Image 1 (cartoon, helix red, strand yellow):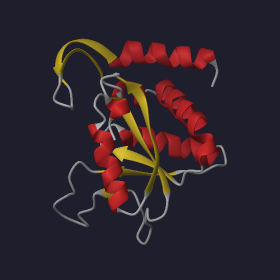
Image 2 (cartoon, one colour; image 1 turned 90 degrees about the vertical axis):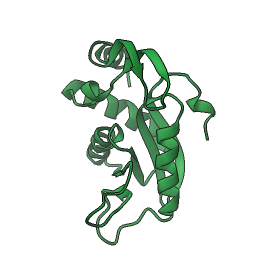
Image 3 (cartoon, one colour; image 1 turned 30 degrees about the horizontal axis):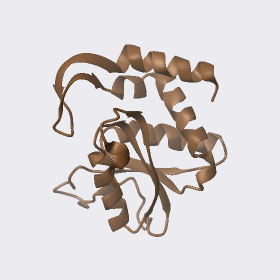
Length: 167
């Protein structure tokens, strides 16, 4: 991905997804700034740039699946799966529910067809914004329980508050 594309993505994130003001993060920590990447992930240009950046970064990792914890990973995984098909190197997508539905199949991992399994498959966990890494760890645990192998965790925005050391 070109430096120009990276710069454009940074501008979209700054404009659409960065804010100031006291917030409580998913980690429970307090902060005076936040990133809500959903407006970038759901913007046509933002989605395309995020998918391209991620696909190019993961291209050599021989992945079978891409997914992560709902909600942030859902648009990312879908966009990357679509782009991977268009590029001739398909990576299927899934997502992990924060808690299994109380009706239907009651699955923690969603998006797989009947008879399809993560068992023995190389998976990447994607995350929109990372603070402590808790969401990625929860998703990775669910993938491991389903028999999948975690190849790596990939985040769009790392708040640099300890997630890299989580594990």
